[in-house]
Length: 422
Image (cartoon, rainbow, N blue to C red; front, side, top):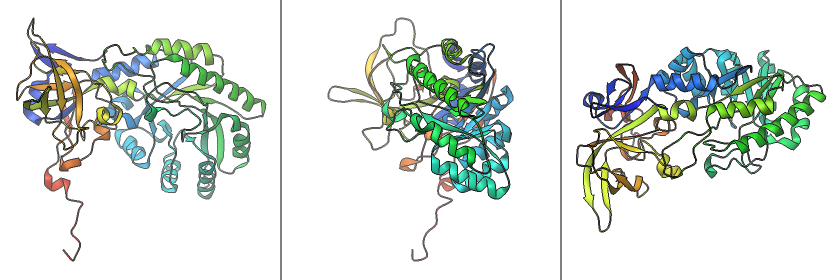
């Protein structure tokens, strides 16, 4: 569920007209709904009644400071994957003990920053990383609380670029080597083992891969405890999918269904259960609003050329991802549709948002909204073709605020400099 709907013939975010925002900030722009973010956080956390849980929102999904602040105030923790995300989370109001540090390539500087911040735990991805954390923590006279990410070799049955739990993926250690690696961790200075971590992929629409991975983790926990390790936390990652509106697509399980499965498999594990959802919280809480520049009739196709591009929302180009597209002005009763290719102005054939999509008739200056764009949208944007990053707007009730403005050309090139010979 989200809080984007037509009111008086115009698409609104909560009680704010998208057309009114467009008049102030221009197009394209991202718009996020506070009510949707807060609701998704609440629905997920309420899906595990009776279980000790900790939700750490995956910052990489949408790292807008305003979005992060909204979640910090709601009581969430944060899952971060870089030094920049550590700083961003702290800036937004999270505290060090709210943070979980994931990612396969933690640098010495990032590890030191995390230790200084007093983070909740490191999710360790490899043996070299484990040794690195130990050396830095020991040098600082600090203790790093760690889980080790176990790769369960489970196919998440999702897009190849966002599956992370198979043996050939770069993430974690093989589950078959868990005893050996934990035994090594227990002997290292500056290391405190607190749990086990697993994450098998993103945008999963079936609970079976989750259940298979979690059962394997339960076996690993039992083995590690038998070896004398204290396993206080089991980090189950994120990955539960959201509906993007594609026809005939699989509808993802409800968070309550996911929670029931978790309780069935791990309800008696005797540990804090940790979750790192990102897309589930932010995905349907955001839209990208764009304006039609031209309608172009091709040999056998009709093109709507809009002012948003693949540099603003790369998911369709990168993953062949589907986003529902709604006109900002509500079509009248009985309005028919025609098949339209919705494309951007970038000089790439891949700059295509939809092919042969049934849409109401569109004209230049009409606005459209790319739905479910709140995750991996603005956060993955670039300035390709020297196009400025687009504004981000947060709505709460009948109020809205521009949380990131559109930079000027001068600001875009301010970090560049000519060499002396030019």
